[in-house]
Structure formats: C-alpha cells, structure tokens
Length: 497
Image (cartoon, rainbow, N blue to C red):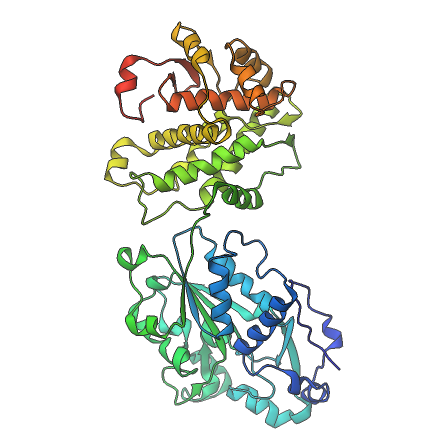
C-alpha cells in the first residue's frame, strides 16, 4: 500500500482520512521500507524523477534555465546546503520557496511534536516518551510540503534563541519540570524545520555570534541548545540568500560559515529585453476586471522594460545596489493605472497606456534607484525622465533603425508645437498627430501601428517624438508639450527639459 506520491508539479495533498493514524498502521503500510534516509535524499530522489520526466523545475522562474538552474540542480544532487548570491529583485526568495515542490506531498510525524519527530527515529524527549507510553498506538499526524518550509529574514536583532532555542520557564512552571529537563526547551525556528527546508534571507545581516550557532548543523548535523546537555541530530536542508552589497554596507558572512556552505550560486538580472518583458508581463497586475478593459501595446511593454535596462547601465545609479526587476513591474502597474484613470474620467470603454503614462509612473521608478553623488546632484526625477527618453530611443532604434525624421523635425523648427499630456483623450491626441507631416505615415509604414487603430497609432507617434527628444532634435516640457529644440538646449547635458 503506497501513500506518498512523487509528483513533478505542485499538487494538493491527498485526503488525510486515507493515511495511517497510528504508528502500527504506518508500519503495516510499508512506508518504512520506502522512505528516504534524509530530507536531502528525498529532494534528490524527486529531482531525479523530475529530470527524467523532462518537467520544468520551478514554475514562474524565467531566465535562469541555462545559468542558475543547472547550478541549483548540481547542488541538490550533491546534497549541498547552498546560498544564492545576487542583487535585489533577482527571484532568490521565489526559488527557495519553490524548493518545496521537490518534497513529498505529505510526511508522517509524531502527533504534537514541535520538531517533526520521525515516528521511526524520534529526536525529542517528547517523541520518545510518547512511543514508550503508547507503542503501536502512538498517534501519527501528517504535514504537507508547504508546512515543511521555514523562512526567516535575518536582521541584526535576531538571537541564537530565535534560531536554535532556549529554556522556557513557563513550560517548566506549568509542567512541574526542572529547568534542566529537555521538555522545558522552547525550540527555535531551525529545530522546527527538522525534516524540511530552512531558508535564511539576507545572511550577512545576521550577527556573527548567531552565524556561529549554525556551524554544528551544517557540519555535524546537530545543534546544542543553551543550558541543556542534549544534542538534536536535525535533518534539514539549509538555504541562504545574500546581496553582495551587504558584505560592506551592513555586515558579512563569517569565513567559517561560508566555508561550510556547499555551493555558492550567482543570480543575475534578465539578459535580454525580451526576457525581461516576459517576466514583467507574468508578474505585473495588469488584468483589471472591475473597471474598463485594458489593452497594453507591445511598444509600451518594451519601453517600460528598457527603462530598467538603461538604469542598470547608467553611471549615476549605484550598480552595487542594482536596479530591481520590481522596477519595470511596478512601473507597468502604474502605467496601466494612469491609463485606467484617464479612461474612467473620459468615459472610455477601453484603456490603452501611452508614453505619457510612463512619465506619470515616475514614483515607481525613482523609488527603486540608489543614486551616486553625481546622480544626487541631478535628481532622481530628472534622471528617470531621461531614462524614459533613452528607452524610447532604444525601442525605436530596435524597430526602425536609422529613421529619416527630417520632415517631422522641420515642422517643429518652423515654430509649430503639440500638447500631449496624459489627461488628453485619445481622439484629440490622434488629431494632433495627424497635423504633423509624415508622422502617422511613418509609424504605419514601419508596421508599428495600424492606421485604423488610433490607440496604437498614438503610442507609436509618441514613441517617435520621444526618440527625437532623446536625440535633442525637438524638446519636451514636463507638461507634455513638444516643440522645437532651442540651440542652448542642444549644448546642455541631458537632464534639462
């Protein structure tokens, strides 16, 4: 009789009513002969099955298939504790949480155990006493894979007691035990993760003396709790995350602990704009079902993503801190919200984001940049506006190459101007662009928009004008007014509008 099922994707656990409820029933089920020796062996076994099936390792994690994932697989196959080292917003926590899909659906423990005691090899006094008292009738409970994952964010105030455990005077008083009795232990998060996965985020933030407390579990497989002459042989997979910036900014990983970590795996940002767009599309909340319908043109998706790519290459932005993938995700959500707001105010049935909406999303951009001294002098908002223009220029270059825009520039040089704020309705904006010689014809000829689709025509026309602003052939005010570029502005550094 088989109760546990190895699966290649996250599934719900089977009904608990079909599982053995006593130690005797568990023995008769044959579970003892098929169970893995340790949690690392269990993960390895299920990982081997998943690789043989060709199933994806972690759903929702994109861009690491040829870089990070093979290294994680190697670490798990080698039964290593490992650390993910990378800048913020590189899906480190998501990867760790996805490790639970490599655990069995359910696992038997002695009922009431705080440390997930193995019914066949209990490590706590509570578990041993319960078996001595009840024998074959010892009650068994089952924990799901998600209950076997314990995560802790490391902060400077975390203590050894938080992670490992300490004496609990209240337990001693209520139970009539001596303080030296093992039953008075208040277990920390690590013992409670026994037979599971313990993840510690931002490891360098953990005080050095607390990091020392992890030595035994990583090398000898046990921990000793202060004040008790007992050791707990824990069975746990330890996973860590760290940001390279933290090594000097807030703390460091002490050398002996780093030496005990089996594998150090480097994460990274998306290596292509297309991949970044896929991640942002997956993560951004753009499907709003309680208002107007939303349609996001691919030009907007690309511009938003290129803002992050431009920021990562800008010398005025701190590269050690990085530019999180959360920037384009949050920006896209704000862009959609601004378009939604405009549609609701104007009574439109459909909201289509425009380039003007990207400017309205500045709060989602400026808050995710750590500026160098030069950047502080210019200001975050000014840099963000420049990043948007450069992103538009890069998008147009990718779509059209060296585009002949002389006719458009001449129209502005003759004194004409165009007001395109994010509050103006779609029909009025389209009428304004129709006045600019060659503008609509250009975007249609390039295949960037269909002539009868005013929404995409407007987006494409705005893109061309923003690219011309980036090249200083025309200028743009903060209110969205396009006009000729003054000679002085062409000589000024970017950042002046």
